[in-house]
Amino acid sequence: MTTATNNTPLALTTATVGGIDLQNRIVMAPMTRSRALGNVPNDLMVEYYRQRASAGLIITEGTAPSADGSGYARIPGLYNAAQVEGWKQVTDAVHAAGGRIFVQIMHTGRVFHALNLPGGVAGVAPSAVLAAGEMWTDEQQMQPHGVPLALDEEGLKRVQQAFVDSAKNAIAAGFDGIELHGANGYLLEQFLNPGSNQRTDAYGGSAEGRTRFVLETVRAVADAIGADRTAIRLSPWNRYNDMPAFDSVDETYELLARELNALGIAYLHLVDPAGYGAHGLATRNTMRALFTGTLIVNGGIRTLDKMQDLLASGAADLVAVGAPFISNPDLVERLRSGLPLSPADPGTFYAPGPSGYTDYPRVQ
Image 1 (cartoon, rainbow, N blue to C red):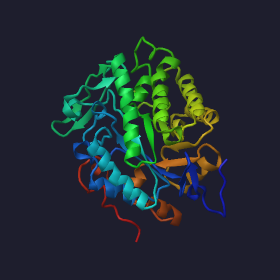
Image 2: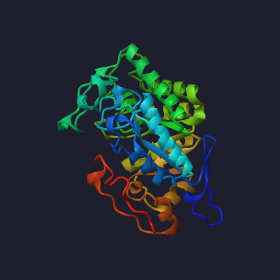
Image 3: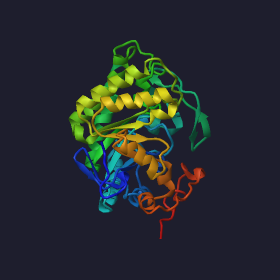
């Protein structure tokens, strides 16, 4: 169990993740910001991440491992040389400022529109099941999601290899590690949920089948770059991106927790299922018991008191904070000093340019 030292709040004490020393236990959660014109990280992004390097660990916005995983407008990738070089500028800046940074590798799967996919590639998913809802396209504004192609045997191998190659690119770009996005209704979670995974082969049906692609991908990435630099984000009970409820949630995620624990990965990042009520809290407690490595919990965390509750109880080893980091690049300093947080402007969350991105003030 985590304990405080010299009356320092637990969130502000040091930690180690996968052999990497962190200056505190406050993690900047991954957040899509849609500033990567042409899907390539740029100088604006370098400054954005540099400003937030006082976080114990930065987890970047979701970053596509392949062109067919780039479902949103202006999200970065890690599948070509220009993208690797762009991210290298980001990691150099964060490290120079004393920070640590993992990249979140996110394949959007069935959450896409064709206008957002570069090079005219097709959207793919475990099954050809449309996700309800719309998304922004720069050419035609809001448009409904597209119908994905179901991945065949060759497609499964290709996508899995894309995750591996992207992880290798991440290390070449100077990242301290990678987080696979297995949450929030994107490709890896689409395999886990029987509503989006209607396959009848070895990758569908039972909990063992539905977790197979995720676990194979984690193992393949860990083999390529090391388990101590490999992590994953999961969101039990998630409904975001048209993920329907299903009966075997606990069986599915308990299986994942056991297998991920055996792999010895750097950390497991949970979008806190406790927000879904008593059954979600029970799921979190069970996964905490089954996964004995570093656990990050994310969801509605804004105060040191909330962080203290999670850390002191052993429910988490690190806490991830999302939206407050957008408008408070010096969030850690503000929490340490008990200073108020600046409000964010939701209207600029996904808009291109520096407004609402790199122009939020620091405490003077």
